[in-house]
Length: 219
Image (cartoon, rainbow, N blue to C red; front, side):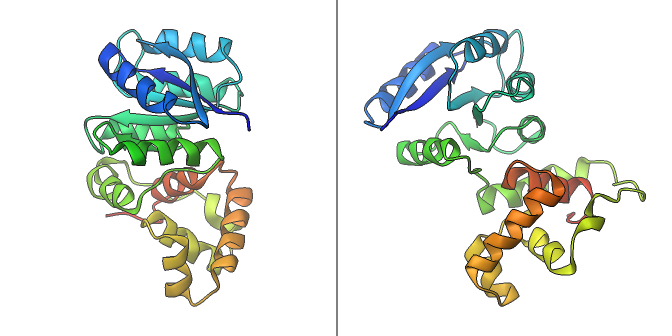
């Protein structure tokens, strides 16, 4: 089996060393490069292709993790970005998710959580923990401008798809959505697939952000 190729972007060498030791102790992962700032991260990630997952610090010199994420995603490479922060939910994390990151974790997360997140993101899935989504709504959404009245991006959805999107944006798991909306979990997955296609979102993170931006959910 081809190992998951991981790139480390963090301005603290001790942090990078700790992540490298943790990742390289796993049989299914390998570290393929490191960078101490955002400019170097973009250059090295694009040069080291294929890279499956970048562990991206949000705050770095020269170029922050938000802009570095935006440039990597915009380049069209299949690399996924997992944002790491010591600051919990804030505007930087929200901006990184908008830039195309597939999720975020706190740097003090347990090793098993980090390794599981890397594997999840490498599969093309997103890390949107319900607790993180709730904090995003509570802390960041109230500071955002009101969605314009002419925002029609959700008009393509059926009533049922809109209900599912609301639950996703509020941090519900597929099982919780199925229970609340009285449908099979497989049906929930079908609806999510349709939402991704209709709204042209790459993953669940994109659905959450779109629901927030259009005012479908707001605290």
